[in-house]
Length: 482
Image 1 (cartoon, rainbow, N blue to C red):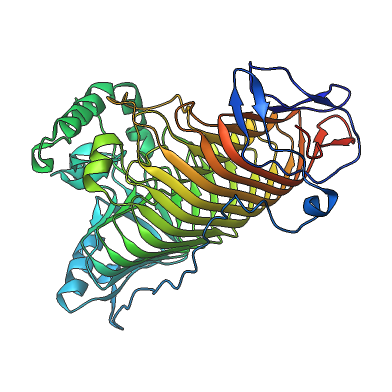
Image 2: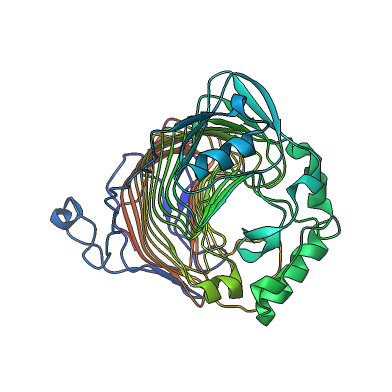
């Protein structure tokens, strides 16, 4: 199905198949499509509903709406003790001293601080005060010995993240200061990581025990995350500015009850995503700002066979009141979805100058599922490719999958969204053997060069979608036509 704009006719057909149906009506009207599929004979839809049916405030009854999570995320309980890093030889020694006393807040006062990796402990808050600038070492050897981690969805032992906590409870990174990762010391490994990433994937696919997947070498060239909490409960990241890490920036893995609030992330290097919730549960992300070298926020749940083995979904995620600029996508779901992703609610966010606004992505070989996603009250401006992209033919991956297992995708809703400036407004692309199901487009105002492409979708409800060509002011939609 392709929707475009006057003076060009609007087409409604599967891409490259069937005979398009042209519409040139300029008046914006309500659209409802239900149980739509593509075939060699073209697009098939049920008979047009009556006018009274078309005006109903709900989508067709055969479309099940996504479940929206209601989160009540507890924040860390930190003891009242305060320890200043100025009273110890290093920040890490201050953390260790505070932990030995039962926990508390370690303050990093104003000034420039040089450090290697910082390993947090349970009941510790690291508070980087206004005017403090924590500069992390550019010497890769400082991040050894290897620690347990998840690298792009695959478990292994690798270089320590710059800030790291494993199996902790009540742990926080806060303050108004800056963390500087000097990622440029690592970014050249993007060109040489193929051998190491393929070796890791081969081990994972073959079932090699995780303790035998030991990397942390220049030859393997697997860059660490900047901030990683793994296996933790009650995590808070608030207020800090995080600049230019080696790879993914904020990376909670296997964590329950995570709050990320008022954080600023600025990155320029390859694969420097801003925030990657990875097989976590109950995550609140609010009032954050991102300008990144890759996806601003990417929700993940493990890669291929290793994701299936771990079997831990990423679920109950709320993202609200955030601003995204730059990067490959403002909000990405996947493509590492093998453990399953469900119950994600994104609302009241602004996206400017990104390659894509919202990108839900997977590919053959990922397996897993994606379900119950709701995106609403979004403002998307000046994107390079697609504003809203749901695509099961994602064609970029660090390692090639060894299977063709498809991803199940169902119940995805886009509501009350403004799009201005894009080559393509909406792209919906399922797999022939596993079509997309339960997609809702409701109250979308789209100014783009082309409106929508749609391939291999079953169960598509469209309502109050007004499209204009980027150079025109004329709106065009369809009205319940076959």
